[in-house]
Image 1 (tube, rainbow, N blue to C red):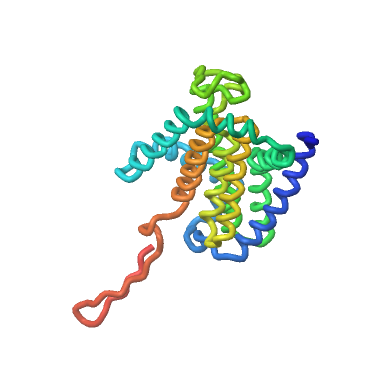
Image 2 (cartoon, rainbow, N blue to C red):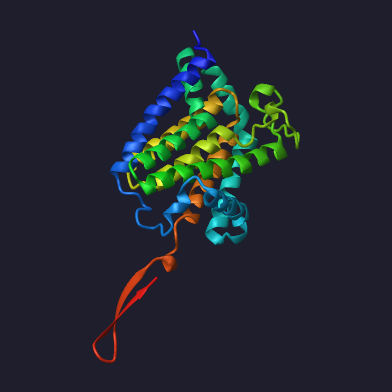
Length: 285
């Protein structure tokens, strides 16, 4: 017997709270990569400065492909090729295989897991981190919360724009994997890319990137991957939808991290060099 959707959501929120507590513990017990990087930690508070910075970061994320080098372009080409091949040759077969292997227990689990990619759950996760940062007087934990929120919002703008532009039909519509309608507002035509999946990976990339703990990274990406699988299993998305979404979300999360790590040239440095008589000492700010 299938559990109703509201029960799934309740359990998802309960488990999310437990996961938040575990990740919070992991982030506070292990060194953060940003531990001593921030010269202006006040930016990572809910304030006008934070929202201005996030708006600037949004612009940088959108135009970043213009500045890609050879390696970046090669990786992008590989991602496009993989998504295209799955879309052209595997999407329909994967859907048919999933339809033939639906069982009650796994269906309940999949419906539960998919809620972990919902905005309410992920925003709640960021809120837990932010409150934890205030409570523990931990600037870096608060930074993790606000970078997760920034990544969440930027991902939403990018992905929803793509979904509106491409308007690919969902598997449940019965239209087939090659059905694109362009500029549609109908939800059953917002299949590509998967919003739940991209959001989960965008937040996971920030949380994993802010911690040196293997466990924190494994839990973050593991849960994001389960969300991706659940979207295909629930017939909400084609396989190519979640492949593209995971790449987009991961890229956005990593880019947000990179934009919020000061470059070496902005950090204080102490240098000692030989001079004409003895040694010279210099301190640069």
